[in-house]
Image (cartoon, rainbow, N blue to C red; front, side, top):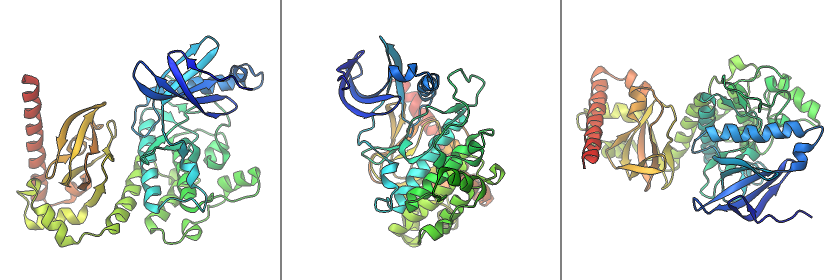
Length: 427
């Protein structure tokens, strides 16, 4: 019988969430910060196991090291790690709801198409963040994609993550590691692993979440490995009807055997998924072109644009809607699109503090277009928000007059925000 823990250090145990070969995970309360946390506790027996102990220890401390360095809205945050007497533990963000994408990968439990695309889009953005920080997850699968009560996404379990930076340490786990059903061909062959391996795994997850079955069907593990390394996947439109052609193309490109034919970055995957999501979101509640024009024409942002230029912008942009609490932009992301608010209110946050609020006619994300730098703040919908998403490529392809109007608005916006910041500092 497993003895019931009451405390681990300062943390008060509430209940056990799960137990595996390496250890157990507990729901706990942190009295110092007054927040709920999850604590992963390693079994001492697992660390002392002659055959696997060294690997278990590496995986445990590798996850603590890697996850504590990654701070992204869609990655499970690790707050602390330590040793209490003989107990090694890791303190993490608590995800209420006790469910993962794995709960929605059976034919009778699939999520709506729009939700699957949205979840995968957020995963791609989070992976792009990790990849840019020199981390390859190596174990992307539905069980490691956690879902919150609000249906947000959190990628977890970086136990076998590969650090591809110069500061890689002895906690690295090498060799044949991962979950075979979701491994890339190069991972199975134990060849060089790059961020493109995670992209292949994400493609398998997307396929499974859409169809309720794997793209590589076989009766045994050796046969599955042969399918992944040698055989083409079952086309998406054969496994599920009524899917957009663009989604079939995304699947085909993520599951290419040769990395040269696969997506180069997870951000590219996210960009293509956003087009599918925008299409689905748009046509669920279609707004006519004339209605869009009337709404956009009245916004201060477009005061100096001619009617023809407004139509040019509308026809080449994405019309998006967000629910209260939706995270539209994440601090630290790199993206070259910006947004104009059609209706509703958003909050601008840095870290955990709201620093500004924007409403109809305001824009945000313009620095991503101008400088191509990481986002310096997060944008969260405070009410139901309708926004126009405009990519940098639109501005580059638009007429000279239209480009000048964009840059004039950008410059005016930056000056106004700088002035407002100066006034706040002065007061």
